[in-house]
Length: 116
Length: 112
Image 1 (cartoon, rainbow over the protein chains, first blue to last red):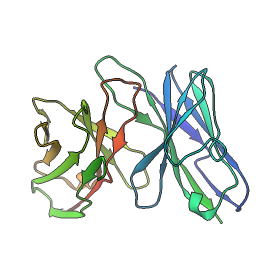
Image 2 (cartoon, chains in turn yellow, orange):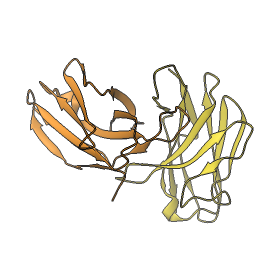
Image 3 (cartoon, rainbow over the protein chains, first blue to last red):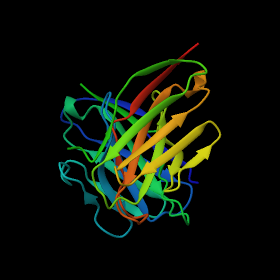
Image 4 (cartoon, rainbow over the protein chains, first blue to last red):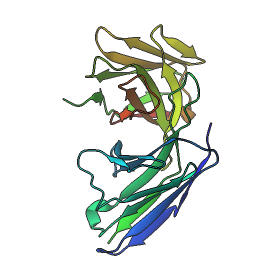
């Protein structure tokens, strides 16, 4: 298994500002993922973050809006740029430890973002 | 058509009842299937993987029907603590490096 922490746990931000969310894992993992969960909705994958390479973004998400860093195998950041109220959501990071025979993803506790 | 579809519910059943959820997926090449549970204001957590032969974990039974491209979750003798949203998850490629796709979730509420 993997233990994941996220900072901040929640924030209230003004329109037009940016917020960087940190994700820390207690073990080295190759694949990290960033998801968004809007109120009452399921999880939508934003991007896959690989250490040493550019993040891979899903349709509808772009690097200018959601820049991602992955400086090492235990840490990643997601920035929500030039925020608008539509960005109000829960942002979750997850990892796939790649344990043999299992494709389970472990999730961080999430960052609850409210944009005014 | 959504890649993974679930009945959103909510299912409201009495304690002790048996309840079943279904989930359909559109990509016939999908190889790995899971049920996750998400409690209110918490992150999703793996409930169980779904194997081709079906599998059981205590009161929970998961089944896979590849021909009809659906998976199911059966909960027997439901407890109040089973109240949660159950997410059907599909990994379309047989690789730990691929993305997983979440269904919209089925809300379950167990009443005393």
